[in-house]
Image (cartoon, rainbow over all chains, first blue to last red; front, top):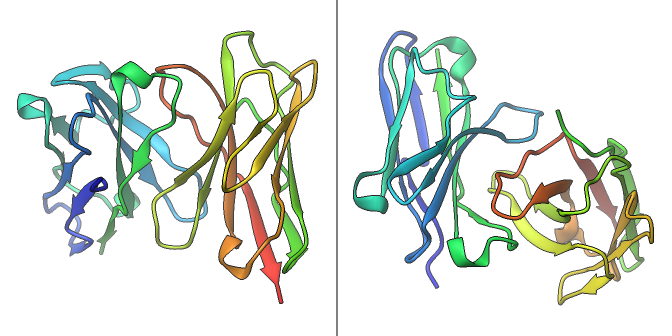
Length: 115
Length: 109
């Protein structure tokens, strides 16, 4: 099966600019996650979707970050305006709802550099 | 807060077994133990998971102690391609994975 697709692979922006990342999960996967991974740290959950509804966004900095999952398939994560500390890899993952004890599959991520 | 404790780094000679320990002394009865690994510049990759019993798949074996307070991931014949950061995570089915800092495993020739 095709994996989790993310784009772009790399992005460099200046601080205070806006940026958007796109994720296409594995077909049929109802649950979608966005993670932020700062260099040298483990991934940190930003938001979890179940179909097109938000399950957990408690760690999403809502003053500058937003995410949506229209029609319960693709998802976009936006940062506006970006800060230097937002430099990180943004990972998308998806999983089957009916196999809840199973793990989930990650994409390769988008590496964001804010200068 | 991560619920697991792992050594920050380990070395292993190529062809030997790599045994990666994980302490999860506060694990609840409905929490599974998961192992993921992350090779440089890639997203985390699922390895194996278990609840109570030991588990084995084509990648690794997972040994969980009887009291479930610790576990060991075993890569039976480590190769250079197994060099990665290995994450041990406890999780209730259906909840999000919360990653700690993991163990950086270096496999040497």
